[in-house]
Length: 332
Image (cartoon, rainbow, N blue to C red; front, side, top):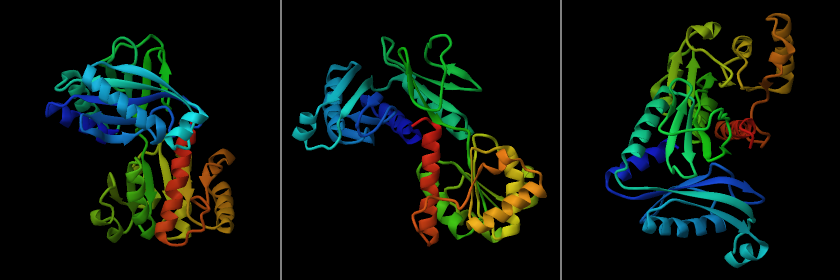
């Protein structure tokens, strides 16, 4: 979404009209659900996808007409079995798609893109709001600044998953949550770029200088050289955050877990065998006083069971598990 908004701003400045295509609601076997977006200009699709297939094919045609008529509209798609077969697609179902026309040089949208970029840099919880009714305008919401650029109904409740309330379609496009990776070894070096590529913001911490070099983690938001026994001196972990524990040894893994589990992160994955996990769990309970609820936050062995052995394969399994956790947490 950050890249999309940057693209919108740049294209509007160069004098192009745009159409932002958004899936507002879906059911059945459509390729992607609510919140899927793509950006269309006169030359065609610039960014994103709403899943390919029949809906995307038709949506590109409708977007071209919206550019000609310079007017936003909504459209309901219902793909019957015959529709799917005639178009050579494999997905059926129904969905509602909104085509938001954005005129070249639109000052409101340019300002929105600039304000959103500021919030991305701050790491704020950020929602993009679209009025799909008569106002035909986009706005923003952050917990710090409140609403900007849009009128919303009183009592509007914003959630983690894309949702329409009346004429307002709201989607969280940034979260304050980060991924704290404890240990900068080979798996971490493979994991961080994968996580960054799929929208996670990563912080890496190690107590060895040679494993906290920027060239090892060029996409990390922050790299910390610090003492694993004093994590709170360097970072504050909250309920929105993810934790990956992969230090150089059993003892440090235990020390890190003893601290981070008391912060109740949304996810805590730990590298290691089931045999090792049982011993660590006993130590955390008896020596550190962690509760059963806190201990149950741990996912170990970390990652989905894809039988990978190399650092790169393990990194993929971990990233996949975190993507799944994020999706389920967002109600998908």
